[in-house]
Structure formats: C-alpha cells, structure tokens
Length: 257
Ligand code: PGA
Image 1 (cartoon, rainbow, N blue to C red):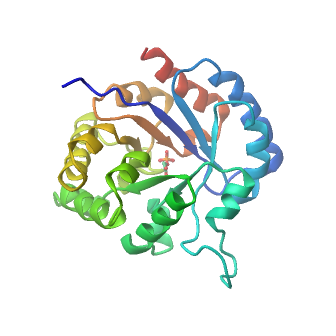
Image 2: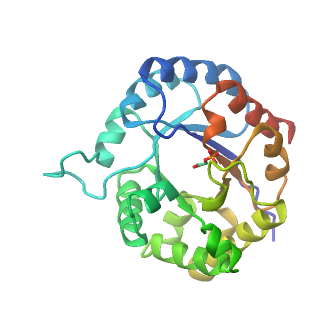
Image 3: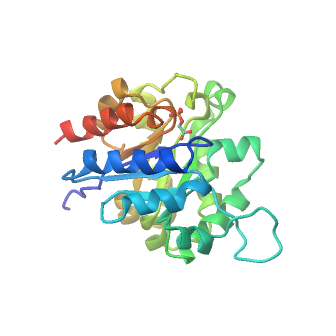
C-alpha cells in the first residue's frame, strides 16, 4: 500500500491576548513569512479579532480561526458565539475542547462532541484537543484517557468527518509550563491516538487524519517534534504571541523539506 503523505499544519493559539490592531499587523507580517511554504499555517484569535485578522489574511493561505464556539446554533444564550457567527466573521476553523476549556470551564466530552458536530455542520474545521493531566500521566493512564476522550468527543461522526478534522494531542501538564513531553512520549501518544481512530473509524481514516502536538512548543524544540513520524503539526500557545518566535517555529517546518 502506498504511504500516505499527510499535510503539516501549524496553528498559533493566542488565547486571551491581542487587540484588533495587533491582530491586523501580526497577520500581515505572518503573510510575508508564509508565502511559498507548502504547509498550512493558521492562527486562533480571540472572537473580537476574527474580522480584523481575516481581513488581513484575505488573499493569503493563512487560516484564521476561533478558540471556542457554542454548541447552540442560535437563540437565547447570552454571551455565546455560534458557528454561523464565526463563519460570518471570517473564521475557517475552531479549536474545540482545549484543556483550559475542559478544566477551567468544566467542558466535558459530551459538550465537546456537540460543539464538534456544530462546527462540522457549518463547514468549518474543528481542531479537537485531547490530553492527560499530570496525575494521569504519572499513574500510567495516558492511553486510557486518550481513548475515552477521542471516542466520546468524536462520537457519532462518520469516517470522512473524522478525516476532515484535526486532532491536537496536548498533555495538560505541558501546556504553558515550559515542560514538553519527551519525543518518545509524544510519538507513543500520537501513535496511540491513531490506533484508537483506526479501531473506530478504520485504518484509512487513521492514516489520513492530521494529529498536532501542543504543549510548550518553542523555536528550539519544534524541529525535533516535527521529525516524529506521527506528528503532523503543532498547536502553539505562548510562543505564537511573538511573530518572531512563531516565524522561527514555521522556519523549523520549512527546514524539514
Ligand atoms: P503553550 O500552549 O504552547 O503555551 O504551552 C499550548 C496550547 O494551549 O495550545
């Protein structure tokens, strides 16, 4: 069987940072850096910056996305933002189930599952995050946690829907802590995620799905992470806030080819 060549996707997650003017100038600067790169680059910006970022990205290959979305389509849900609003503002993807949403805002797999379905129905790309806590990591429960999160967060989806989304493996203990999982840990978790996908949605889907790593990705560890066979890209938090360091991470991808 022919070896599947998966695209590489690097996404910056700004979290609750940056105002519209900063978003505009960052994305314009990023556009210069990503021209002629045969990989996909995106930025997940705050809701309030989507329009400005999308305008700055127009005519470039950069994806602009959101960091969260409501599981309701419309109606009396004060403070919520629907997928059609994201689309209207210019987003093409949405992060769903980020560990900060799961842990600080108590989002469970069932809610993540409803959000993923909404995002897919609207024709946007979900970036679905999974990952174990430090305690689960230390007690050897990583594979079991990933299995449960993947099966329940993606419940009811067809193989083609699963193939279309991006899965991001983000060990909770590595997010914003400066601790990156070892390359061995990362490779083994990614391979396990692919195995879980294969068992439920088939080998073909597992071979095509893009699985990103996230958690303290920096310019100096990006190349080693991208060299792992089951790592198809990176979800970058803190190091994406500075255009310079995000560009250095993108450069690591460029050097790979
Ligand atoms: P970090 O965040 O790169 O700052 O660890 C990653 C993420 O939360 O997606």
